[in-house]
Image (cartoon, rainbow, N blue to C red; front, side, top):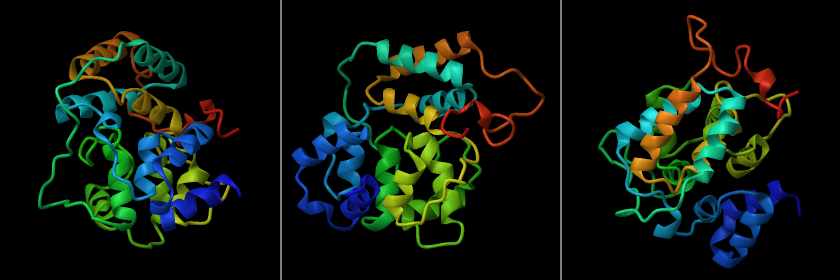
Length: 236
């Protein structure tokens, strides 16, 4: 069975797949185990969740990552992975408000779980070319929509997912012509690597990014789809 078929099956009937089998798939597919647990409808244990984090610091970290080119992303991911694993005061808990209560089931809960696994709520996500009201709708239920393919292309990058994999999870037909509107999965690779970092280590990463420098100032920030995508090896 193709990996995309397996991912689609996990969403439909993943509760019958054991965590041990999901752990084997996580290694084979290079997808975080926490993510496979989410899409299969299993709870994610605290040890796989990010530590307790300050939302403003996480937003600052994400903003800096979104301004790195591929060379700096690779350097930053190496720096993040070089940091020691430290004990944290407790697992990350997403802030909840009446404005974007997450869904308890369906694709809305899957999307919410995936961003939670990286230490985000929708307000800490970097710029994705999606409005906050759109993100709220995605967290609530993420219903079928003619815009859902664009939404998938927008969120796959910061999640660090391959586009075909995420399309399979949501049950949307994939085309090789699809491109991320802003961030590719290499930005998401940094967020994946940073899952276990404490607040102090996140602050250290922000300082490292400031030392590396962001993209050359071109008078206006340019997302990956506007003159920057050619650097990504995923899209020749």
